[in-house]
Length: 106
Image 1 (cartoon, rainbow, N blue to C red):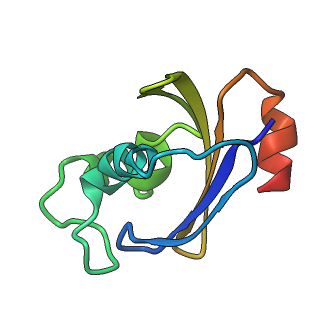
Image 2: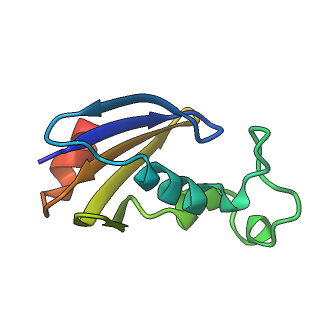
């Protein structure tokens, strides 16, 4: 099941975090934000220098898969992510779980 929930601002800052079963390090958020912010200019818009924008009008959705395996000190975490209105909702799970269940919850 879900171990931790995180809510990230459009700049990658953790707004809310909630731990249910053990504590998940915030490094998973840094890992996610490193992938998600590759094509952003960090001022709320898309980078004008990125070559991916010409090929794809919504590069943020294509650069970050909704489910990622993230290395952790305790093994591997499965990180589920949803982007809504500029906010990123993250759920960290230490074991395999039904993806639709977690994505529906988010």
